[in-house]
Image 1: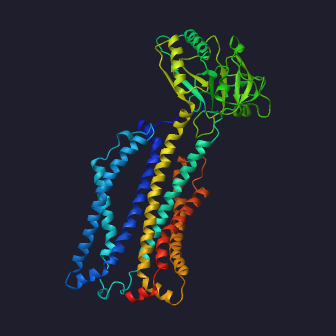
Image 2: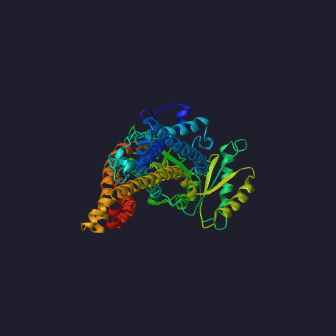
Image 3: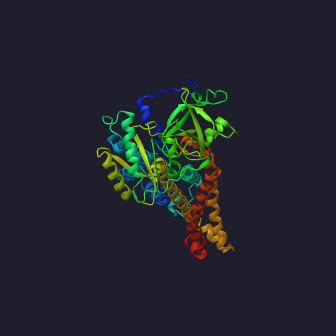
Length: 552
């Protein structure tokens, strides 16, 4: 028993938040990544704005404005821009938080109490102002040049290296976000499309619990369920029907593997872990849509007397018997000298959640004398009836036996869907972050290329006057975009390989370095970069050399 049961001690706080802690840290990282993309974008725009105002600043310096005065002016403009953006962002954040709380699935600890508190508001305002101040320093520190008085087009163009690095950084961070979104979406798709071992469609469940005060003895419980079972079987259009103490994807009980014995065989291994089991009535496998791989289903005649027969899952049969036929074998479950015969082998079904491998399991037949009956039960109906119609019939039949028992009726698809609510919510959030990052990266690339075209208007005009074709000019601009994007994609792939390993526990059947996710993220960014460069490239291809040279 010691080698099969492991004791884990955790604090109540850890038990409450351990499932969402990793996801929360991951989302916080996505928020900061999006902040960095936005800051890089703002820095690029401020640098472009400073380049456009180079002549104005040179005039101010020429008529007596000191260096400190010019720096204060530019930093004040940056702070006002940051303040306006932070106020608008906080308002938008409040609206999005309300929508987030409403759309979030049940079970996320503390999300319903989430609010924009004063400390959160101050942190957001401080971060916005600090970012505006930090990324406004570079254009503010640029020394006004006397050549700018001639005309800013004739002045030496400011170095583009910093802007190109910022664009590459935006692309790299956007690739990390996009890779994360691709991983989570791929994981969600695999989670929703994996085989469950049973068919949830057209399967309705009715769950109820007997009152402890009235149904204490096993005989009272058996009498109730026998009467209820007879009545539920007569529901018009009820289809396949069965009762069970629990149903997948969760809810089964467990027994140590080593406590079981096979007649005529050596004792089982002492480190086999726990084996799940359920008590079911005949028709359970037909109602659940679980295939019988060998032997047969339970029969009503077997419920009258004797030991309850067993049906093993394929994984348990393989573990216990290997290549030997398990049908007809006798198994002692509780070391009490009572042996049950194996009458069939059923397909494995997800019984510990849909994101883990199914545990080995066996099924026991609920007997007429009360064995296998408890206070909790689930009635299963594979039927064409809708949920509301079946609910009326079940409520009526249950009230005829005991009107004081509440019942919860829902589809199996709804029960299974709850296991994917949290992964779907997480994938949706990461996808939204990635979408914002892509938009910001595209805007940044478009802005830098537009500025580049404006600064190189004279050069483009000269090239076209010497015979360069518009297509060649357009491909030149696209080449710039491809180079910067390629550098960003390369850096982003390295970052993704380093960072996505930390979300391994949040993925299902998907490697954190999944090649298809990395390739799809890089492909999307390449296409987006080409689209962002299309308008500046087209503008460059339409430059009139005569007009360009005359303006210079």
